[in-house]
Amino acid sequence: MKNKDDKIIYVGKAISLKNRVRQYFRKNNKTARIEKMVSLIDHFEYIVTDNEAEALILECNLIKKNRPRFNVLLKDDKSYPYIKVTLNEEYPSVYITRRLKKDGSKYFGPYANPGSSKEMVDFIKSKFKIRQCRNFKQNRRVCLNYHIGRCLGPCANDVSKEEYRKEIDKIMMILERKNRWCKKRTRKRNEVPSRKSKL
Figure 1: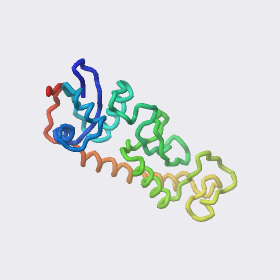
Figure 2: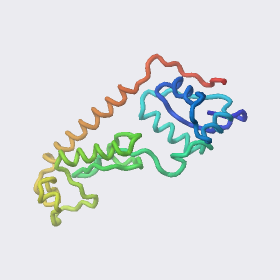
Figure 3: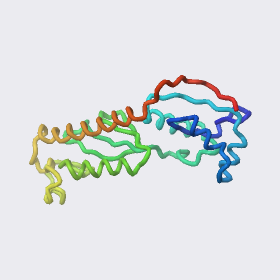
């Protein structure tokens, strides 16, 4: 959303732009912040993305770059969480991160709801016996997870790289299917991009 000086005052995302924009102009109990924002809107610009993940990343980048007046979230250094699988390690681990690095790892996300990424990682750790320690070293004293049967014990050399990788491959399959399902579910149909929409 832009004001009459063509300055960005708000960045948002929606599966249905028509429905989302209509909400701002309804005569309902809007907050003072929204009322003020609506009074300043002169025109809209929008970008069509292929899926929800692209929309989340684009929204995040635009907010950080332009710091719109009426965007409360994502102005700081925080970003949406990803699930990271450290494929660059001999015995990979799975955890949540907010930083993308070109380090040979595989990233899944972003997750708009941080709670859903945590639920997924908790599910993975409960079903698959992969290591949960962040500072992994071989030939070290085993942790509690090993003793209670929740880790295969790569630190104690109790599992081969091949057997451990089979567990990681199963996890990757689950995460990739989840990503494909999300993209298919949110893919827009028959949309034509437009640069500007005047009020």
